[in-house]
Amino acid sequence: MKSGDFSIVIPTIRQESITPFLKAWECEFKGNNVIVVEDNPEKSFELPKWVTHYSWREIDQDLGRDSWIIARRSAAIRSYGYYKAWQAGSKYILTLDDDCLPEKTYKNGFVKTMLENLKMEWPNDTWWNTSRGNFYPRGFPYKVRNNLKTVVHHGLWSNIPDLDGITQKKMPNLRTKPFTQTEKVPYGQYFPMSGMNLAFRNEIVPAMHFMLMGQDKLGEKWPYNRFDDIWAGIFVKKICDHLELAISSGGPSVKHIRASNVDVNIKKERSGIPVNESLWKEVENILLKADSVSKCYLELAKGIDKKGGYWTKLARAMNIWTSLF
Image (cartoon, rainbow, N blue to C red; front, side, top):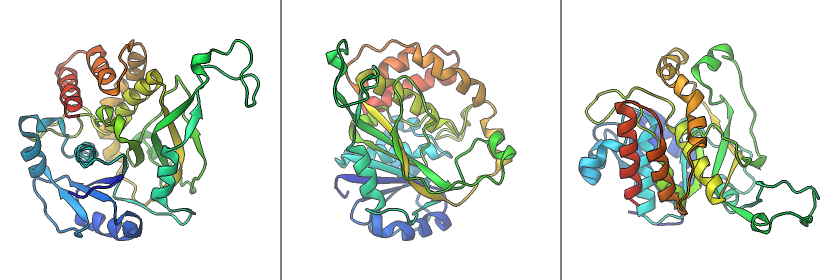
């Protein structure tokens, strides 16, 4: 396995998507640890030698009886790539969808810009500084006069935005422009974390498990789909707020070139929408006491107050996932 400070993880299911993707990004990616996780029972096509290529077979061989925690027929299969990147010793991990191409707006390159975002520090906004300057007024607690380290940067997209099916149906011709501005996601607020363009430090990987969506390793469908990255983002934001770690969002954006089928998306999302309306509120009410990412993630797994077999299995998967690290 290649080593390096930066790993790039891409889930894919078809050669006609991943081949032009890799060609478009080769100048940016070559020399880094590039991991492609093919969402098929075994490798079904060849990739360049500078790419590390996995499929279900490698996942099952590697994780054995615990391989069920990696979703199949879902972009959530990229979670396995995070694990391999962490094993390779990468300090930073970037993930992209295979229909996201480079823009012409990167002055210093896409990967370097992502790295710069992950090295940024942000003011602690649990308290608001009334001075609006470079000093703290009387009464501002000393323990929150610190800058916060960025552990997750959420990149955006130009051309076709990442929409849910209902919104996509209402706004079929919506297109967006390249985006370069970056801002901190405020303390106490959640955000829709898309895995389409995302970078993070390796220390957050024990909480970066994209949920059980699509189907399991035996072909049985999980009851929810297309919320794997979104729900993972809720958990990650809760942990970051508790541990005083920062999440940012914005540029560099990527050009999203393929709109998924709106009617298929509506069908896939139908069962998850009611859960999505309330899950963040339930997570917000969980009291975290731990002092590490892994321990906080276990507290969340235990604290989710939802009934049913899926949630029992999800809690178990979360426990297994964080035990890998």
